[in-house]
Every structure is written in C-alpha cells, then in structure tokens.
Image 1: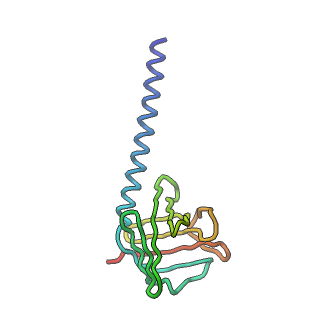
Image 2: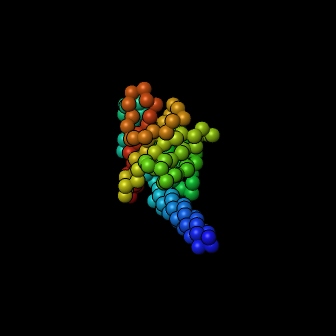
Image 3: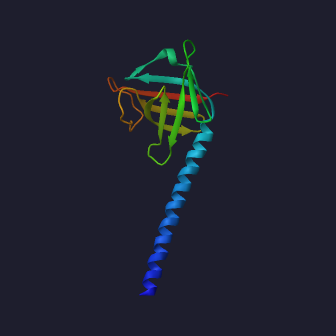
Length: 145
C-alpha cells in the first residue's frame, strides 16, 4: 500500500512539474515575443472589411513596454496597451484602445509582423483574412530599419 501511495505522489509531483515547466515555457515565449515586438513597425498593407485602406499605408506602429501607438502619416495617433498570449494557436493579441479591447491574432516572422483583429465584435479572429462586412482588420508591417 505504501508503495502505491509513493508512486501516486511521484506521479502527482511529475504532473505538477510538467505543468510548471509548460507555464514557464509559455511565459518565456510571451516574454520573447514581447521583446521581439519592441520598436517601430511600418504598415505595408492595411485591410478593413476586405478593402485596402490606403491612408494607413506607411503609418508607424510602435511597441514599447506594454504600450503601443499607431501614427498615420496624417492625422491623430492612436495609443493604448497591448497584451500577448503565446499559448494560443494562432497567438493572440489584445489591443486596448480607450478602454475598448480589440481581440486579435498575430504572427511574428523575423522583420514581418501580421495582425488581424476584430473591430466590430468580441470574437477573436481565427485566420488572417478580412472579408466584406466581417469587421476584421488585417495589417502587415515590416520592422523599421
């Protein structure tokens, strides 16, 4: 009986250790992505409801210490905070704009950052596609050199 209790406690300890390691890896991945996002990104394309929004081409998005800004070439900048979750697939990003949370997904590939977020509902997108009347925005950035 004691051997079985010992085996059960060892199994429980192993499960806890693996869970902690997974949580640590997720935190490390989020930390790594957060570090990779830091700096300025130039908007190469911006689609809303399946149509290009030319006035936001060449806008500058900057990430710095949990905050972000999007500065169009003309007009007012948008500022807010950003939260990443690397444990999801695709990875998720929440942009807080004046207390409104825009739920999105992101893909970071070297010097290219792709975002897709929902402007018209609380649903998080599942793919990087903006279709007519979807309320989805897809933005492709390249890192400022």
